[in-house]
Length: 104
Ligand code: HEC
Image 1 (tube, rainbow, N blue to C red):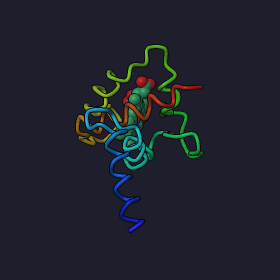
Image 2 (tube, rainbow, N blue to C red; image 1 turned 135 degrees about the vertical axis):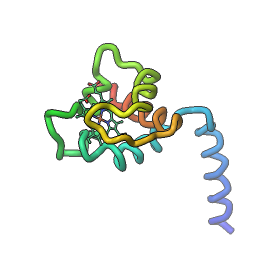
Image 3 (cartoon, rainbow, N blue to C red; image 1 turned 90 degrees about the vertical axis):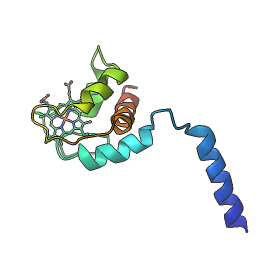
């Protein structure tokens, strides 16, 4: 019974905190760790990477960084990247995840 109550309140919380129209940076992190980690440094705790590919932190630190533009950019495969065919929502979520790394 306790577990059930807990489960229900989790559902409620999720409903309140993650409206379906908002970008979901947590989901973006999952996607980035699945699709982008092979080439990019996607998070601070990742050590492996290459200087040839910009880390997501450095992408977010660019002066002209714009989350919406990034989401649009992600819908088109960039040159050296195999086409990943992200959905619009996935692209938005990844952009939100990258935007989070803007904070110093
Ligand atoms: C096969 C390797 C590869 C994968 C996988 C890959 N990238 Fe890239 N990415 C690159 C390379 C190489 C560059 C830099 C050269 C270029 O722009 O083509 C780059 C550039 C970028 C840039 C532009 C950085 C800038 O300076 O503006 C962004 C943003 C980016 N990638 C996001 C992503 C995201 C998000 C994913 C996962 C969904 C991803 N990449 C997966 C290789 C990859």
